Image (cartoon, rainbow, N blue to C red; front, side, top):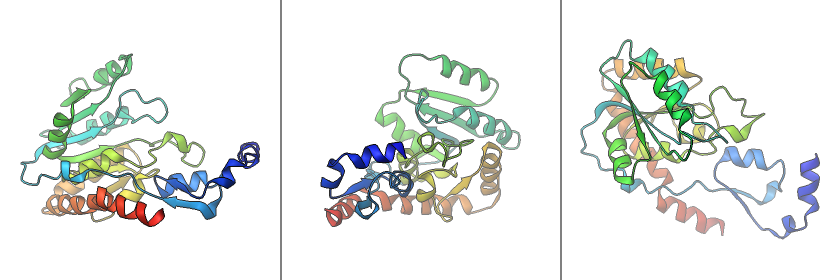
Length: 243
């Protein structure tokens, strides 16, 4: 109530014609503080064409991309490692690649490396664009655990508000198996990937996809198609309709 009164007490709010949000999740949270009748959702523009080269041989790789030091909403690489421990018991021919940015203190990364000792886990720190694109294109699966173990109603700031890296991976044909929280729920369809509740669920869903012959190809193709819904062209058209 205090926040609400402060915001509405500011007359500038009434001079704003439109409030534009990067997902329905963000919109739902912030509409508690801003006028609902001025709300619009506009998903971020993704340059899907940069990642969509189709004829690249997919390796038995699970990729995750996210900052290693992200205090506001951790990417939960610790849970990804736990999930991979379970997954690799039945699929030892796969590897997990954790790529992401790191600035300053690397103690958290050191802890991740200790947890992954003995597993086929690779760390790619501060990759350039070409390296990242190659990882997307060569990976069969994309995992994202941000928001796991968080009550998104109590702590919406700790979940993924949209999920740009997920769309980039999908544009490259990597099948998303991601946390069922925040804006990620708006990206994934049942034809293009899976949402999971925890690290155990993530491992089990990935195993099930692998064990069903032909499902990897169909999901990969549908991931590419779904990613196009967040393209630069779609963004431009939607923006023009809003303004």
